[in-house]
Image (cartoon, rainbow, N blue to C red; front, side, top):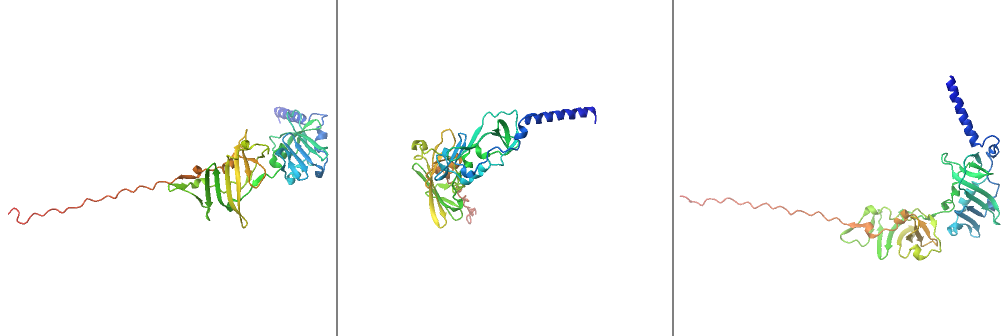
Length: 330
């Protein structure tokens, strides 16, 4: 090996050594004693009565079970809560100390018991952008990289609740109706899943290219948030909104559900939404809402005129040549 190659290898070793020194905080740092340590104190799931994730999400246990306070008391999913809190258990450890990275903004995660005593408090930073796993946090005065991304602690309510509010199978749907103002459109589905629209005029027909989503509007519907029950009717806009009625079979019974789409939520693209069998008012995506906001002009098109037949051509009558009169010219 030449002296030049040795010099290159030596320089590379210095760079790698400096990087390791930097990440681990240098000689005499707290890195060796922190690496691999558990991040949270030991706690019992049964003792947790409150979960606070910054100002984004708050859950509380009460007489009626767990609810999401920041969603106006909407029921939380006990199984999801247990699954998420277990991620703060003994398996959550320091992957490494990261020197030179300052966490400008952190999200405090706090677990409390029924008396208000703090059981766990952890300041989470952003997720590691390259590895696809791990998350920065403040621990024992150091910036550390945790062994889990802790996705549920971003504050998304969907990680803590069952957000599915309707699941009517499209194969069970027999009829739908759309109502807006004085206009009403009613359709029935035949045995071959062929739709027919009531009240078509002689020069109209159903636009079959627009019927693909008629029976699936309430098949897999999830809410994005729970609306404030203090909102006024004028803010919600249900009185002037769109009504979607679906008739379907449920076992041996025929059931009808009515959904109403209201105003667009201020500052976002969602719309207010309610179902007749639920006391809650939700917000859903505008994409989901559009499936329940059909009007007659969306579904009906002009029937094409039949091709005009050309008049039959008539051949001119053939005339026999006149015969010369007998004896003419004699």
